[in-house]
Image (cartoon, rainbow, N blue to C red):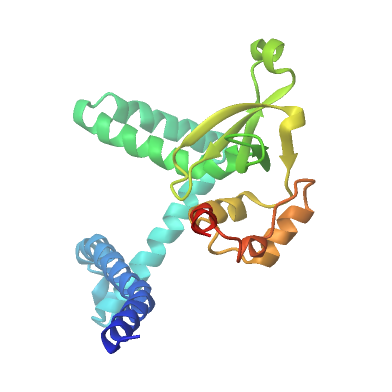
Length: 234
């Protein structure tokens, strides 16, 4: 192995080691800058620094904590009838303003989708998809329409997301006898999909196979198996 190749591999290994740290630092700087740009005008408008011995950092922390308390209180109110009525009224008000309506409605729908994404999934299952012998992780979203039972029988709506982009996928109407229930959380299944299985150890895969009647082969069983091209060459 040449020295140049060794140096190149070492540089790539170091790059993969440092990259997550650099991205984290940059993200934190952007987040802190965004929070400062949001908090500083409030501190200046309320002259809060006068009550904190002109220590700006203390005033910023107090303002930030106050905002957290206010947001938490608003979230608590939305779970009550009066809060639900008040926010529905605000939605109607913003919905009639021409320019604001487009921005507000889009952001509102996006936040609602992110908030309800995990709650909408009833449980995690395995289904044979896209063909027999291959299994895909899916999320049961509900029972299939009764009008489809004449063709599918008793079936469920199963969302089969793409990996690693789980925002896209396919809706499959899966008959009940083709669904294999798996005793893992939605959060763990999403992590498995988003990391393309990299974050899961073989012990976790073995546990997954033990929790269902589906036989998931050990990846080690394929090590050393010659590929089709190697077999042809032989």
